[in-house]
Length: 474
Image 1 (cartoon, rainbow, N blue to C red):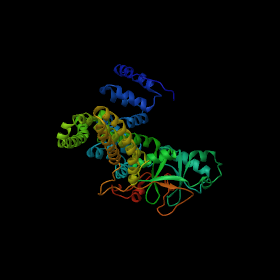
Image 2: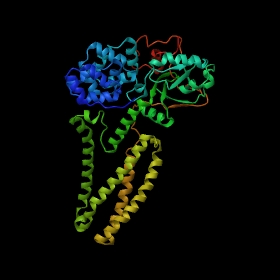
Image 3: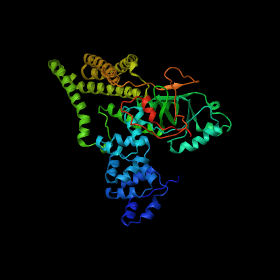
Image 4: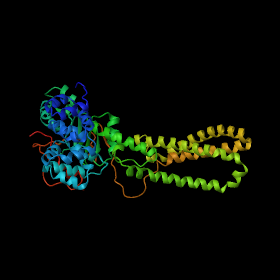
């Protein structure tokens, strides 16, 4: 698609002059992200009119790119029928992303605007834990049978792929709906029409449980360079897929959270622009008060040795140097450990190994910095002052390095926590206990959208899977 720019001022002039047909021609061919940027640059009074002029499909894509507060404002001015059409056109994962940022009463009102099938699907996805893969996945995918010919599989893909978010990967499932393989679409395109799907299979694929943490999905897609990742239940039945564009947003959020933790700030739950003064205050003040308390302890220790300091006044000149050096070392080690935990390079179970390594690093740093400081101490007050300052610097650096590395890697406190399941890696057709297999849409003779009673919020993945759309041909 050719990239071109349309100035928001030009759009405002066309809206003011009611040259709506010209406006539609100017934005024709623009991508949804570019149109979303134009919409946000307009005056608030012009945004709804501009949005209402967009074609239905494009309007849905643009809406999905908007930040939550701008979505809310559009929903406030849309009519009931316009809201109904917009929700129906949204992809399941984008629809859940919208609901997660709304209060409960608003979610209930919007759920009532959905069709029974879409409502059951939305309630099912909302029933998974907030940080789980289940909230991130889309239940639309394509699956084929191993006994089918490539020609039949391609006809099925053409038929069912129109409503699937991606057809880069095609799932192969058995009659029990368990995932047997995940094949790239290029294998079907390059194969002979009379070949069977089973001839294309190598049974080497990766899947993830629906209750696993979404960070695991990010790591798996990055590690195995996947376009999509099958999401399965306890029996290995596919419930949906997580695509690479979904995890990019997650990766950005998790990286931002890690940066906030490194700076001793409670992670923000919204963008900085959407956060108010009171919210930012609440995120920062607990840590600052804690640091003040620690400083009072340090002041108390100094007060206890007031006489010693008054008799050897030169030692007081080194106090800021020692304190700042300890803080810098601790900040360095904490940053390294936090990032290692975030990328999966370090696990909480490796705490002892990490502590031993950081102890060694701390000793080397302490000895080096202690030796450098001792020369300054010798110059200021003689060899006795140099020795005291050098030893003090060494001890402070070793302890600060160990404490800074240990705090982020503290094991979780006791208490009820959601158990996260590990990802499944399948190789060579392994299908042992637990059916750890990746899947796509289920095989069935009559493809249908979710039907029947709405799934319970606490329903198991196995029970809620009954309401998933079947991707198989009639």
